[in-house]
Length: 440
Ligand SMILES: Cc1cc2nc3c(=O)[nH]c(=O)nc-3n(C[C@H](O)[C@H](O)[C@H](O)COP(=O)(O)OP(=O)(O)OC[C@H]3O[C@@H](n4cnc5c(N)ncnc54)[C@H](O)[C@@H]3O)c2cc1C
Image (cartoon, rainbow, N blue to C red; front, side, top):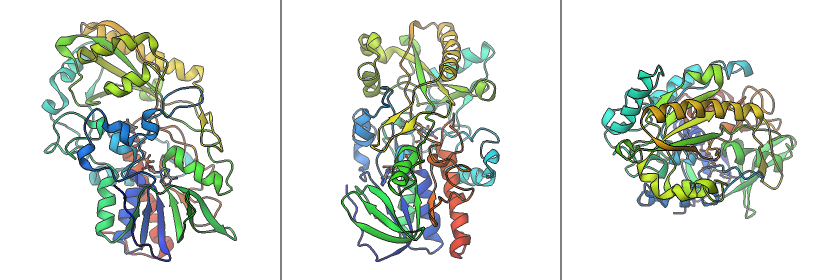
């Protein structure tokens, strides 16, 4: 679905990208009475295409075929609501001290985001799924400390499956929720419009230009186009160092087969073990590929050795190892990107895999193997304290960055809660700048 508002001559604020960070910011600013335009590259995919095996193909960038120059698959959503539309609805706070080290305190905003998104710390057992609860029991009897994953999912609407397929019931929070509120507040939205660059006059931003050459004017521009989208716009705006390196939280799935306890129908990432986060830089969580992403990983992703196991997916249990990777790689001017995994990254993945194998064996799983790594959190490409200042402002006046790109370092855990918190932080900064009243 395409949205094209009748545009004003000039806006107080143009927000580029409608993920959790951009959506939250747009809602807050429109509540304060600012004139706000949201520009989104993706479409407003209708609710009826969500929640089935083919939904991710519509929503994911390049139908899921986006990858690094080295061939590692990277997932991101191009749709109103951002990648959060494809998320598992999992909410964890950032690594302790991660933002403070860069000179920014977002603790208060993380708490605000937690309430705003309705994070449920004790998601019902029956929605998590009895088999995941069983794996948790087995792992914890071995000394692990798995717990229920906090979820930004409304338990009343949830049917306990389909998060990464876009959520069939609308139970999961995403950037769409604040975008819809911003529209009610009078904000404008243009979809299927890709911003290519910020327009600058004498060191100050005055608007943006889209791929088809439209120029749209605004006094303040906030880039919230995500860890890969934002650096591209900055590069084309003359800030060539954007995307000089980045992080993307690589992960791998370790599969075993046991038809009696398959977690294929359970909620994605229903349980988590984050004890190894600080000491070893990884978290463990039960989740498995969608059918499409398994086939993608086993073909274009290079996992030919496990392609023949596709038909057994319905009898599988899978534990994901997700790591906080080293900053590195590069986003190039043509939009391609490179991110070879370092030895340190591999060591973290392998350490997590050893635990996953132990747990799967104890659960009676057979034929255990791990997939090729994959990533879904591009971030830290325009870092606070390095590429933007502690107000998230670039060296072009009134041009800001508010999304995963601004993370001071790779995240290592789910990003949505932190992006929403950054949306609140940015709103507070702009409220002061523009002399607006705080939203109630
Ligand atoms: C499969 C999957 C599962 C995930 N699961 C979880 C989870 O359970 N919990 C969690 O916290 N995180 C999860 N994540 C990560 C999380 O969704 C993202 O990190 C988060 O949405 C990033 O938010 P953002 O606001 O920075 O950007 P995004 O959500 O990426 O939004 C950026 C928006 O900008 C748009 N855009 C890009 N370029 C342009 C341009 N040039 N012009 C205009 N618009 C543009 C994009 O279309 C997009 O809508 C998952 C991600 C994936 C892919």
